[in-house]
Length: 265
Image (cartoon, rainbow, N blue to C red; front, side):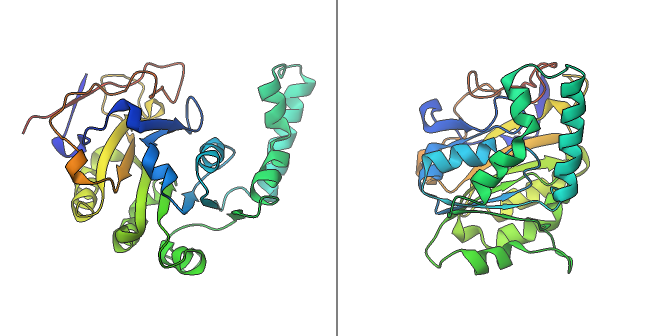
């Protein structure tokens, strides 16, 4: 069991207050049920070819879904279809789920183009001129009294937008963020959590086991669930084992999930 710094220890929430949305493996996340129900909009950054989380979120709330990913352009879909077609012709695809992946673009259109409250934007989130900022998204799409939920999985670029998140923290109902290259950025992550603690607090943690080959090695990708839930309902001292049984599952089924233990001081 790996010893993690104390600042990564989540506040305790009862298991019945939590829910898993998205895939049973990579792309699924654990978060407070109330954060889903109380959000007016989900701003999702980085979806690639998996929007199970966004679909589950939409089923549980009336939130509008705003998804951003600069990588899934027309070339992405053409190449994906060709690869899947070759697998099919070589008789490597038999299961319905595999066939679904082959024609997944149809599902993409139905969810993001044909449902009025959902939108997809072929844009990168960031700070440079060719990127769109979180402040711009909020200004363009979010009304004054609306609360937002952020899902951030942008493969290392999350560090570029932490200041943007801090600047709008009072509008955030909750957020999920996957941090990459964790061991060399622990100070940055700790500083980020300190700067949002008046409004938001860590309530769940999970390690992406794709990021390490050894279960005793410090993982280089951590999934953090952060909530605006009232601090009076939270307790840092209650004992809980992570991962949580029947809520957390390994990102890679071929490797065991990573267990947590936290420093005492």
